[in-house]
Image (cartoon, rainbow, N blue to C red; front, top):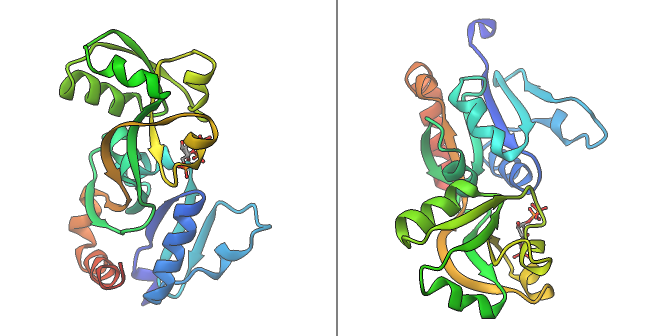
Length: 215
Ligand code: PRP
């Protein structure tokens, strides 16, 4: 009986990633009509026939839901995954949401990255910034956590440089900033709860297999 099959729950990061993920899931026959109603304030959506549930959350919360098993599967950027450092399985690079994690700033700031000087770094990603400067560059820096519009940092002299994602580069250009160093490439990843991967291995592996064909 269908009621005996437990729901598999997906946590998707709100915004562009969720839209792309739903398109990709639709291409393998996993649909959720309920989710397309933009006027809806519902937070959780169900596909009864496939015994699937979907919910949208803030991007940094996706790995948290998956680690604790509140969601079996999540889709989130590798930037967030690296920053949050949660105990989840990363099973697939979905190949969209591509951008680069970079150190950026005014061109003159390039000099400050050469001599192990103490500088200020603003970022939405303090963990990634710390790892890069402390462990890779061996440069002691003061990291300032911001929650968005990070490019303001060097402009208003809050910081010397920023660590942020760069996609088209237009935000940097329009604000007189540039990429100074590249830290790592970023793309959307599918993650799975560690217990779900054992308990629901067959269903989850089937989804991974189908997605691998289309990404
Ligand atoms: C991201 C990122 C940059 C911008 C990069 O910000 O933090 O600001 O996009 O994209 P680009 O290279 O194509 O210009 P987001 O739009 O997520 O907003 P936020 O800064 O408020 O987090």
